[in-house]
Image 1 (cartoon, rainbow, N blue to C red):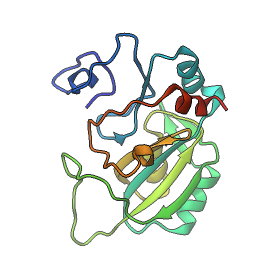
Image 2: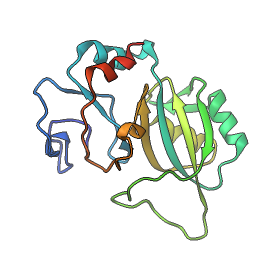
Image 3: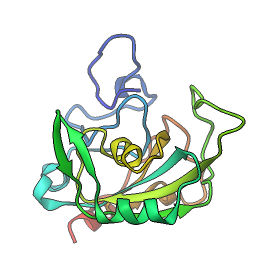
Length: 186
């Protein structure tokens, strides 16, 4: 699903969700069609500006399934920042928080990731304060572990864990109160 309301080719969009969004709601951040997870939508212009303005550097955490057995050394490299290519130019990422995690409980991905019986996979949590195009995928590739599955787990202090025991499935929509949304402002 594309993280936009306007139609683009045959891909489903936010307009296809079974939820009546107000006309002035806007997605905050984007997920490419190969990524999944938390996407915030808001009509609060202050919050939107706060989260979209790069100088505000809010934290985004991703759970990433990578090909191979991720090492502590690779996590340390990710944490210190790695050099990736953005639009053909070298870019050294800002320090991030990266550490190995157990496989999270997530719904099956559709379409499923590629599976190779003889190649192990591992999971890493990566928390960033910046958001370059396909940055997480480029970072894991730079340390030798290509991304297989990428799930945005949290934006600021709001996360998929906020479902409070409810299973979060693709396309689920839940409203966050204005009070909870204010956690971004602090």
